[in-house]
Image (tube, rainbow, N blue to C red; front, side, top):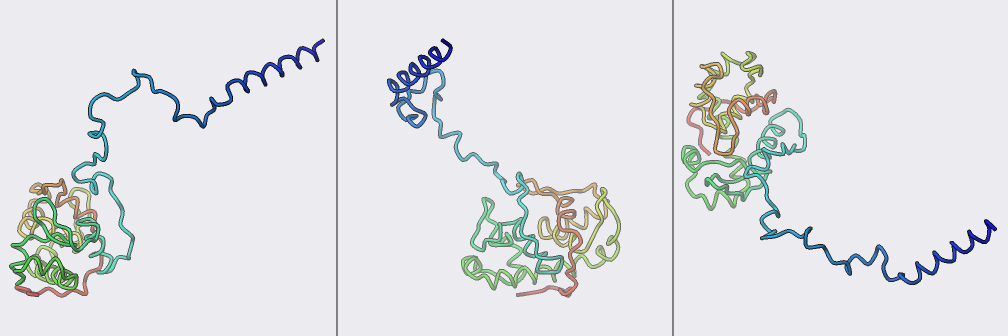
Length: 214
């Protein structure tokens, strides 16, 4: 008797599945979404909404290229522009290393279009600016290197990265106030952050140079 009941139930299941054969999981396109589940208004406002400074928010990590000068400059470039030569940000900073026009003028560069189109010139400008800031900050590098401010060990590369962000004058104020006079740029990056993020690189191969020009 149990065998017959099982057979009848099995047969009934086949009949049901056959009757509704077109209503399978693969037929999602035919289903109507209930009104209660539909999004009202302009759904596009929810698409591609990134923080203004997405690179900072997600802490994207660049490829590690070592702790020598090449690793330093590429890590800094990745932070500034993801290493792209033709980037101009919302404040008008230019190129792979995001230079301001006033800084470029100090190094003898006046044609911004030429600068953006010339990768070799951008690399030379970065090296020149490092040499220039090494000269300006030479006493502070000697005085503070190896000390700790805010729990961060002060290194030459950290100082020069911070100078690239905020200028040598602001870095002097930060060091001489022992971190009390910290400057933050429009995108939320601070001197203290750059001191920590770019600490410990060996950039001794770039000599200090007074009034360095490209």
